[in-house]
Image 1 (cartoon, one colour):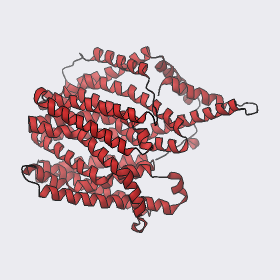
Image 2 (cartoon, helix red, strand yellow):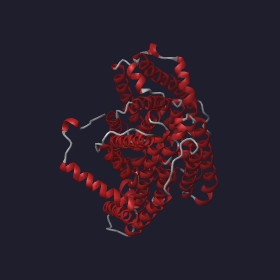
Image 3 (spheres, one colour):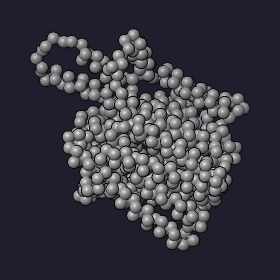
Image 4 (cartoon, one colour):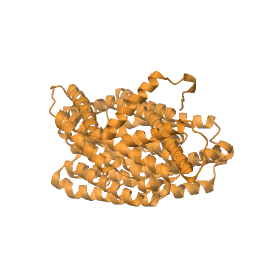
Length: 546
């Protein structure tokens, strides 16, 4: 949120709190009070977004910490070729998972009616039973078809090592499809703490299971997938029993008509999700074809580390954003939803620019530290890939209008165009430029996707971008990079830490100097903190939530 916007909202709220003598409510007064009410709602929803995002962020930070522990272990334990095989097989299984979900995890978000389900238990049971058993049915069918296709596929199409891994991992298609709808239930109920606990437990459990199995059956790609299967099976069973304990999984409540409605909504999102997977991971096929298994291993490590960086922003935002803007749309309407998304997008751009500056100065040392020196030749790819990820993350905001208006076919079509461009760029550039072509194609295709989404959603839910503010963010990031890039202690860990802290500090300082809104917000924050210290909120009126 820009500081000017927050200051305006808080000023309006303070004026409303001052007692006034009764006056006739003319049209202007009614309009003013309506605006104040909207401002108060916006503040409340942004605070809720911050609280829920913080739960997601804590779980993500813990999960990333587990990842940062496992990342150097797996990159050292597995050969470069095996690591590339694990990543490649995971992307293929992701395609099967996307098809098996039928977009039902998104339908679970869209068709949840909080107000009606509070008053009508039968409708609540119908919703949960239909979404759960419908996903189980679709995922089971696709899993069997996938496994059969791999089993009888010709060796020229899928070589034996890859086919073996895919057959072992095929059960993950069913498990991850069920996970997606079960976690969607937690999201739409805004049970963010429970969601955080489950996701962290799954991540940590997978690492522990893989390490345990390596000591039993050896170091291979097969070990990784067996460990993942064991942990995700337990997670699905536990979450299913939790629902059953609430009497929400009654098979007799499965409603075929409602299931058809959710499929109509969700089926275009299958295309959308598969197109995104191709957009995100289609380059792996061409890298393996043109440059070989070792180059794929280097690219997978650089891509994976870049993905970790991006997850710090996109996951908390994406998980918390959809339920909030959907509720805002149904309860407050277009104006409040547009204001909320516009302010949130500005906040994201500020944070994303700073994160890119940190990545640019610290990525090489971080890669050596986490993945070992054998991958350092791929360090130059990380800033390029992170830039692409951050550009793509803006679709969380820009696609909101399409999601609200159920324009899933439009979303799917735009994603297909972007994925096709990604494949064409890789096909044309990889033989000529080498591995950097895959990173450049990622940035260009992500940028195209975001541009197309922005054009499509503008008539439905127009979001404003403050270009002057964005230029200030970029100027501050440039100065931060120039001032910290040459710091060198000779030790990768210290280099990464010192450069990251210095870049963040310098970025914040430059924003303070360049942007009056940031200075105002800093002053407002200081006043708010002083007020809280002088007048603490009593414990009995504090709000806690899951």
